[in-house]
Image (tube, rainbow, N blue to C red; front, side):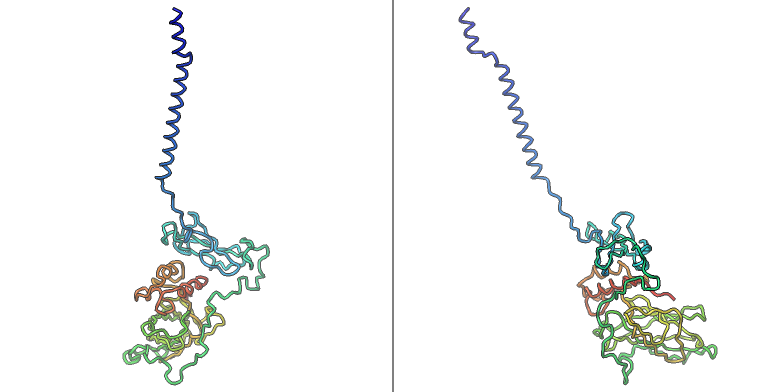
Length: 376
């Protein structure tokens, strides 16, 4: 009996079961820890890191360089979505900002890299050092002074070559851009105060300072006559060609017009905004600044020479023309930069130099500040 009890104490320790359970739990915890670490490791290996999204072209303030002292403020939320300038609110509470040129529907590229995220921009005054308040100034400018900045929103090129002079021998280009019709053979005036006539015009287009190459030396221009003495709007189209100084010559024919009236002439080029002209020889001190409302042009039977070459016809309203310069026009040039095929040049080569480039883009951007056709 004594030997049996001794054997049991020697070979079966008192804490055998507890030791077995403890070791088992440690093994299970180790397996779980290794499995969890492995899962995290392989998950990190398999999971792709998201690509960093480029900020180029996304909605932001100042997507285009504003004038000094001003800032383009973008409305990047859903309330800022737009398709044209008319859908964007004007800046009407700032005496330093012209409301008519304060809103712009800009075509941002968006996250997909395409021009599809259109958002409204609004011009804000920020002071001469660019760090002032964007709210209305505490004191508005004197109403008798010019409330808007006296900047010149056009390129600093010389708009007229210094060697311009009217030809004395052959006054029109040798290509004769006038219709080969007989103006008096078949049309009989209805009374002594009506007649048929030609308007022989000289024009100057923004950004074209010299004669283009022969393949680009033709511009189709719409000429409209308006008079307060009759209700009809009369218009015709003519091809204009340039001389060596970049002055464009052309002639347009009108039938059976009242000759005892005074007229305004509306001129619209194929890539330009329409200009209303009331004088037979208008001039301006700053490109694009000429403006008028009351007609002073008198016409007679036969040829009528009108010299409009001392004012600039601003560029920017590209095909299909809608009477305004907006981000549709800038996008047409931006999306075709560097192209030289004939179809693209026909629609987007503003200065007729044979390539769509940054000069064309700059011309259209400057015209955005005076971006609508003159009406009758």
